[in-house]
Image (cartoon, rainbow, N blue to C red):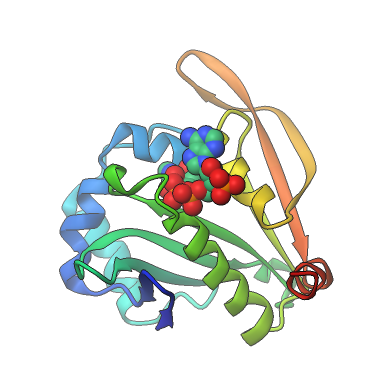
Length: 185
Ligand SMILES: CC(C)(COP(=O)(O)OP(=O)(O)OC[C@H]1O[C@@H](n2cnc3c(N)ncnc32)[C@H](O)[C@@H]1OP(=O)(O)O)[C@@H](O)C(=O)NCCC(=O)NCCS
C-alpha cells in the first residue's frame, strides 16, 4: 500500500468490480483515460481481467486502486506499466484515472502522481517514466508538466474519436530530473 495525505493506493480487490464497471462504462472518463470512448465493458470481461490481477499473474504492470482516506471510497485506479518488451526493467509508463468525476480538480491527481513517482524512482529505482495522452487532454498535460515531465514526441493523428483524428503526446521524466526538482524545493 502507498500512503498519501488524503489518499492511499492499494491493491485491487473483488469488491472493486462494481466501481471498475461504473468507471469503464463512462464515455467521458474512458475517452480521457484511454484516448477513445471505449465504454462498453461487461461485468464478466472486467471480472476476467480482475481475476488475473488478483492472482498476481501479470508481472508487467502494478495496478492500484485510489482510495479516499476520509470516506474509505474507491475513486479511481492507477498503474505503473514496465517496458518489459526489452526484457529490462529500467522504464515504465504511468497511468491514472480518477473515475469519480466529482473528485476531479481537488488535488487527488497530484497526490497520486507524487506517490507513483516515489514508488517508481525511490523504491523500484527506474531510470525513466513515461506519460501518454492525447493533445487536448488539458488536465492530464497540466499534471504531467507540474511534475517536470517534458514533451518528447507527438504522434500525428494517432487517435480517432468524435469523427476526427487527434495527436498523441508522449511525456518523459528521468530519475535525475525528478531528484533535481526534489532538492530544489
Ligand atoms: C487527469 C487527472 C488525473 C488530473 O487529476 P485531478 O485530481 O483532476 O488534478 P489536480 O487537482 O491534482 O490538478 C493537477 C493540475 O492540473 C490542473 N488542472 C486540473 N484540471 C484541469 C483542467 N481541466 N484543465 C487545465 N488544467 C487542469 C490543476 O490546476 C493542477 O495544476 P496546479 O496545481 O498548478 O493548479 C483527472 O482529472 C482524471 O483522472 N481525469 C480523467 C482520466 C484522465 O485524463 N487520465 C489521464 C490520462 S493520461
